[in-house]
Structure formats: C-alpha cells, structure tokens
Length: 256
Length: 256
DNA sequence: CATTGTGAAGTACTTCACAGCA
DNA sequence: TGCTGTGAAGTACTTCACAATG
Image 1: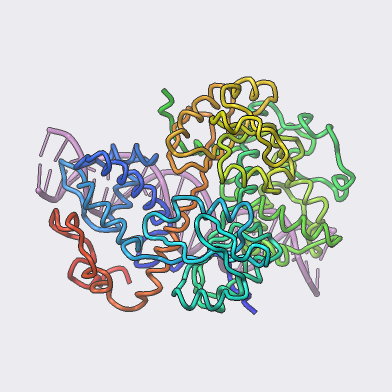
Image 2: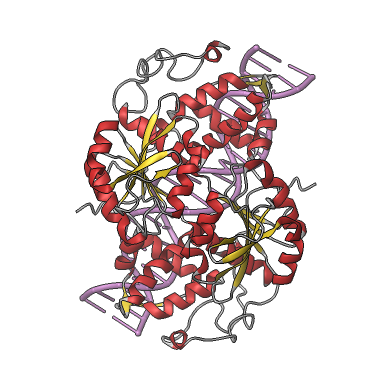
C-alpha cells in the first residue's frame, strides 16, 4: 500500500511558488517582531534585512500575494501580518497530534513555537504502555491504540512523527488512513504516502552532514584534493571497481 | 558587527550543486541500509526508490562525483558508501559543541543520529549555572564561560545552537569569534554571521506553517477563495489600506 | 522622490531521452 | 542486453533594473 511519492506533488497551489511559501513564515516572524515594537510601517529593504533575504526577492514574493505596499512609503506592518497569516492559513486553528513522546517528542511538545500561531497540540500519543497517562508539557500521553479515535474526534489533519525510524512508516500509514493529510516527520526515514498527502522532514543528521561537506571544503580551500584524507585510512571497500572520479590521482586543475 | 549574509554564499564548492549535496546524506542512508542487509549492488532505479527521488536525478547527482557505476549492472554498494562518505567529509571525525541544554538541547544530545557517522559531541554547554555539572546523555554540562576554551581545546569547527531565540545571536557571535565556521541553528532567529561562516537552520514552527498552507489549499480545493475564511473574523488591522490582492473580490481568473 | 511592483534577463535545478558501454 | 552517464530541453527560482505611483 501507499507507494506514492514522498515530496509534495509540485502542484504550486494558486500560483504561489513553493520557494515563496517557504519564506512567508520568515517574513511573518520578522513582522511580528516589528509589530511588538509598535513599528507602523516597514520598507522592503528593512524587512528583507530582518528576514535575512534580499529586498528584490521579498518584493517579488509579496507580489504573488497582491499589492499590499504603498509606493514611496513601504508596507503597513499590521496589515501585512494579517495578510500573510491568512495566506498561510494561520487565521484558523490547526489541531495537531504528536506521535512518539521520547526525548525529542517531549522536547517538541514543550516547544512554545508549536502552540503559538495557529497550532494547538490536540494529543500526545505513544506506543509504550508505560508512557500512557504520564504528563508531558501539561498533557496526558495517550496510547497509540486510540490513535484513530483521537484523530477523528479532534478533526486532526496534521500529524508530527517523532518515533524511532523503525516505527515511522507504520505510524504514518495509520495517520493517513485515519485522515491526516500533512505530516511533519522527524524520524530518519523516507516515508511513502499516497498522492495528496504532504510530508515534510526535519533531519538533524542530514543538516550536520551538509555542514560537514562545506566545512571540509573550507579546510582544503585552494589546495589539491588528494593526500588530505585519501591516505589516512582507505577501507577495504574503496578499492573495488576502477576509480574514475575527478580527484582520483590527477590534481584537479579545472574549476578553481 | 557581523552584518554578513546568513545563507551560505552560493560558492558551489568544487562544482557540486547545493541541491545535490543536500541529497547525498539521503543516498548515504539508503546505501547504509542496503549495506547492512549485505546487498552487493544496486541500480539507480532501486536506490532512487529507497531514497525517495527519481532515478534520473540520482544518476545526475552521482555524475558530479565521478563515474562510480557499472553500465548494465548498477552501483557497488560498499564502494558508493565510501565515496559519498568521503565527499561529505565523513571519513574524518567532526567534534561539535551543543550550546543550550534545555528540553530540545537535551533531546538532541540524546539523539543517536548525532553521534553516529563522523560526528562526536565534544561538549554540552549551557549558560545556567544550575545546569553546570549535570549529566545529560552521559556527559557533564559545562558552563558557557568556558565556551572559548572548550572550542579551542577540542578543535571544534561546528556548533549547534539550541538556546532560546534571545540568546542565539550572542552565542553565535562567541562561537564564531572562537573559531567555529559552521552553525546549525535551532533557535527561531535569523543569525548574522560574517562571510565564510555557514549557517543552517532547523525551524519547527516554519515547517508546520508550510504544511498549514498546503493543508488550507486542500480544504478549499476547486472552490473560489472568497468567503471561506474572509468573513470569519476580520481583525481591525485588516481594513487599513485599499486591498488590491488577487482574491479581494474578483475571482482570480488569471494563472489557472 | 523614495519605494513598490514587475517584465526581462540570468542562474540553478530537474527531467528527458538516448548514446555508450560492460 | 540492461543500465549508466550526460547533452539538451524544460522548469523553477533569483536578480536586475526601471517604469509606475502614492
């Protein structure tokens, strides 16, 4: 069952580019900060700086939402907060369930950012009977047996998976069968879901590995690649087929 | 100080596209699974399925690393594991520090994925004196006063920030000043760093907001956008300037 | 007249489709 | 023959640069 694609099916909802959608929360956070400091208006330049993007990109992003600025002046902070919130669907309340209340799950449950702005943790669910009834972040943990009922009773459409990798697909299947159509996955696994279900993944070790890649490049900056790590310990596996990689033995002169 | 860009400066190290780098850890995980099951070779089609991408993309990705496959056969699993590990810099050991040992920090410290594959938690650091000396994930938490010395003594170049938002920039500045050049940021803030320092951010509430956006679109599928939520509760702020958005009153006919 | 909003140009990434090779 | 490796075509995103305008 459920052999569908894992990523969102690129259906670019209502013409707003995915890349833009991914930045809206960033703008919203920056705007919320300004709002709290009672700043009435902000220019694209200022807001872009606060959000860590460049101003042309920000203006282009906003242009997909509509013409919400005033030429010569800037954007009305409160108004923009509302428009972006509405666009993101945060003017309504999203009940979510969290499955897997281990270290990470508990940390997420306690994390304030979840509860704020449109999201409400409707239930914490764990498969371990020893967890059932325990209080985490002020809520009683419920047993996984009741997962379907909990989702149905609360009208949940967003689920967070923080189980071990081995349990994630099974939990995912049950969530989807029970009606969940958006999943935030913290388990280090590729989830298979049917079309129409969105999965986003947050993977701590992947992020670190990407950093390590760039870190390594910094260390070897300018020098040729060979002899930096190649001779350190060449595992048995490394000698199998004939190497044809760009950095096998010839110093890479191309692409300085 | 440090008004530099936050994102990596797009310097596409050694010609490997950033998007490809971001997928290498995914391939590596899938390959590790195959390796554990003693699968000797794998085709691009099979591996792509396991990693949740399409096979043309995978082959293109691998083509940036070199010609590591065998036509008509596929890829040697062990060999590819080694090549990708090497490319990502995981054949060396990266000491990391984690700053901010609250709920999330503790969960991250306990998370196995960190310790595995090339990374070693060299120190847990917290600013709260009450935390100092406490054991988390089998390590004694150290006080933030010693941050610079810890980084120097351990040759740390990668730091993980899991502090509250308010402390993140300050911690970041100290990490950078002490020699850290890659940062994984869990605090919901945009960090400013000088050029040459990489920042990646993991933001739980942003991911949820992106899901909410798509979820909202699913709910209103096909219907016109007006009157779904517009009349529910219009906050005072929403009435400020003249609305010119594409969904103000006229059904958006453009951009089907 | 400062600042938005946006066509047009530029860049990055993805997918196709098939030649090349084991 | 089956599968990789890759030019070429297609798509998505970013940036430029300036006309429009409150």
